[in-house]
Image (cartoon, rainbow, N blue to C red; front, side):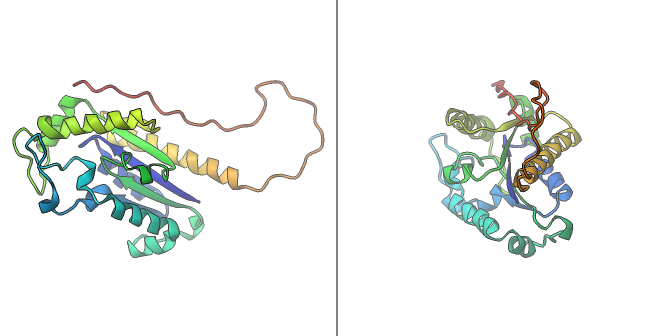
Length: 232
């Protein structure tokens, strides 16, 4: 059983923190960070907004990222060993890949590979404040957040929603522990449902009296949370 889980959403929304917690909690779990696929700085164009275009899809080598995902799909065990992840014998048939990044759902060849897509959101003011407290290898020039980062986030999120990409929205204002528990439980339920679906069909049973409505057996599909509007 293979699960590919996307942890996407707004910059500084808590994606890496959540991903790291899930990585420690889930057996046979590997991670791919989208930030590792940035093109060299001298290949990042300057846009009409006057800023280096760090927050656009073209600044990422998404073909290389897709190749890395395909390598995991072809042999999760080999991929895990190559990345220092030990395969636990008691769960050797289950493998999970976490993809973490801010533009996970904007590259069409990757969109349909996800088993689950999460999208973290936080309000504009909180996002701007968190961004100001971060130290980046390439520091943010003055005006970058309002002139480039936030507009690109809005643009790609609107495109994602217009294209009908289904995601589970997560409130990044919740505590780290609450978010972790919420997503971990959802992934574990997905694994349980997949395991039940893979079980062989039972032998035909003896005829039984018809049951009334509400007494049958079935599983419930989790619905994505309602889209959370941006405040700016």
